[in-house]
Length: 196
Length: 115
Image (tube, rainbow over all chains, first blue to last red; front, side, top):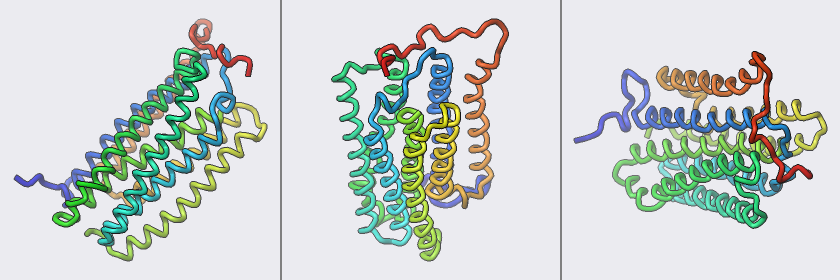
């Protein structure tokens, strides 16, 4: 049986179910990360002492990773735009780049983590490090999830383009919305943890 | 495919502009953190730049500026309202002056106090 409204708009909502579904999921994600940002504010306001992020974390590394993630968001929108223009080869190139940039981000983040571990800067060392590890690790898990989904659409999942191009473009758009959200969270995490 | 070729070309031109703006604003965020304006103003400045970047991503990359579905916009407005509630919880905690405010017992950053 065909699942309805995966491509066509539902008359009552004005969008297809794929888009409404991913936005509802992202709304729940806003509350998940919002809770942690709220926790950060409570800890920071309640702390008798709070270190400057740039004294503990490397600003150049954080800036580099921010640029990498923004770059991956750009390649992601280009991947979707390529599908809209029926340019499958371009889609493969941009989606491949998106996954590659995500892997660069994870490699750099792992380097930062190992550096912290080697200096004994574990979550138990201070309140700042506890919230740093919690927020960046949760964000990192989201990046890993994005790599899996985007990697699937770049590889085996891309076969769908040849049979159901519109449905495939909608799937990539939903994956893209998730990916931009992950980028958006980092846009706030970077100044909050590294610079303030 | 929904949307014409010209529409997509128009979108691509917007993506390029936003990509440039995000790159510039990232540099501005880092440079602004070196300006001596005090902690409070520094935080406000950083959050204003981050919100600008976030709005660009949401409106252009996530196509929210073209979104007309009331279901979607309604969901997002509710999300924003409750996000503000979440952010207000710690601030209301600070403003509650019934009794004496005490710092959290575990609120320390002793490992890096020397900095």
